[in-house]
Length: 259
Image 1 (cartoon, rainbow, N blue to C red):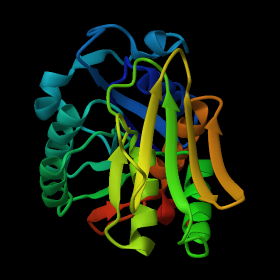
Image 2: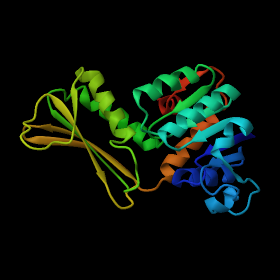
Image 3: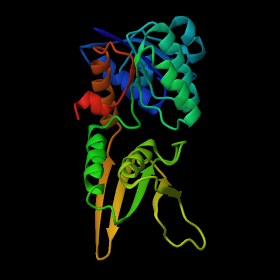
Image 4: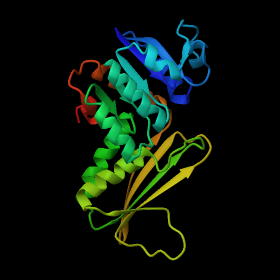
């Protein structure tokens, strides 16, 4: 049985992760952390009934964390601190938080020298195939204009999404250090660039499109998430995979899925 702790257990993804852990025979919800709903039963907050695991104040994590794997879907600042704590306690990690800065990544890379961690901007199996399709296409469409559009719900804090930035990173790998342009305004003729655009509204779970635009034709590669369960299912796969990994370091969903 893999003992799982969930950081951000009262959030949208955190509640869904709790549901999936509770319903999986190979997993046990050992702990739940958040800055909200402290003291309440994590199962009740997640909608699966009372399970006897209260939500603990995230500030207490350093004192009480005791699990095989910590799953983190929080905020960038909180996640960096949670990764530090987990690394000190030898707790493996699955991190789906986005919005990390370069400074954050320096700290994360240092912390993950002590523990194995799956860190991905998107745990959806479909999105990881989407990235592979983008990687395939860009090798044959280097002369096309390339634009990236992402759409998310009105509550998402960071923009552009980690998934969109990952797509841009893949494209730049084949096109050199091409400039990213985040939105356009005024007189701005298109140059040698990749445009990245973010839409926020309503309850959009997540949608990403990479446009390859040529003279007389256009190719669009799109992934649409219809439910957050797509992300939760991938995170659960990552928990089971990382539980068997002994070598410290940062892994991605490519490793989990054998891509």
